[in-house]
Length: 436
Image (cartoon, rainbow, N blue to C red; front, side, top):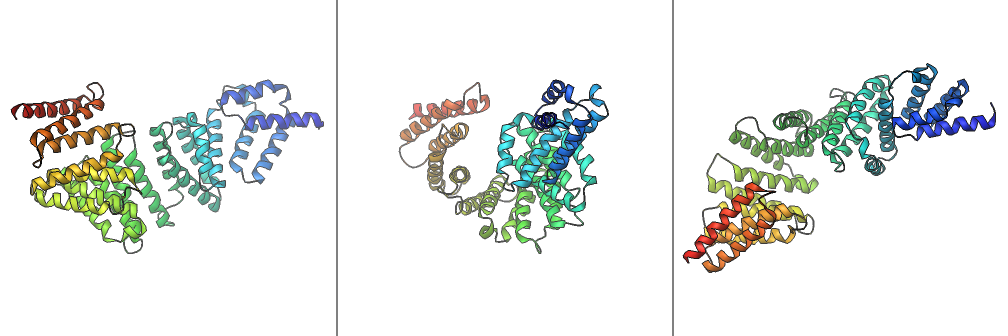
């Protein structure tokens, strides 16, 4: 084969491998149509073999597939190549994850190709799994399944682009991986995937919210059947914490009963010393348990509020201002709400509530958290309205100031319901001021 002609063939193959759209592939083939002959097909096959020799099997398969289509004359028919190109991008992402386990390179690749994270890619992920995985040798298949788990973990947390499709891709990846990492052969790894599916469905934006939460409960429960307390105490505790949150947010069933189930799960989780191993999960569980107690229907209100206050204080042992400033502020806001709800020692509890709200506002700046800032200003205003210590007139002035602050963000156009509520609070404060 003439050296110059061979170089043209190699350049054309390189150009095809660098294509990112169907149009680019068609353009390359059209521009180089005079060079597409039997010798070119030989070069394509040799290039695929070389690519496979360095571990890029999926890319090699794509190139061979294109070569076979050219050889069969399919290019002259209106056979679309879009799925092939979606598959090529999918393969590139998976190979990047395999070579870089920390997924940083894959993350950058996804950021640069947000437009390719779409339903076509989701469909291709499923088609690729049907076409390729059954033909893999066992060890290769298991390695690929773990790569899919890493891919899904990345997509579940990927906050760039279309969040709806990101979660869908994560779910598909986990489901495909679970067909190879099966419960009977790899029970612990399978349970991890089930737990991650529960997390993904808890965050899912597509489909029925109520149904997604039921699926989350199902997958968390599945995981806990393998991650038992006796054999995997910390995974069991983490799973109980996740299940508790799912029950607390459940739409189906009786709310009061769901809250009891949630409280039971949180209490179970806290029986294990997860603080030493998972301090953030421990603090989150304490905070979530406190919220459940605050909303609890059964039992005495005063006792439930005291339990909530105790849990919030526990959460703050880990959610420190220096370590977790946003969660520190969130827990202080929640704690302030709990103090306001406690009817016993009303005067002292209102002082504690005001202090909590003021601390939360140290972190909840209007610039960074406008809606939460407005909500906390409203809560602080209500606390000043009810305050029993100090000058009534001064407390009302401070309440009015807080309500006016809140209305800077709670506009009638953007938050009509909250705007109405705060306007009513402001009107009541003005009425009380006139009476003084």
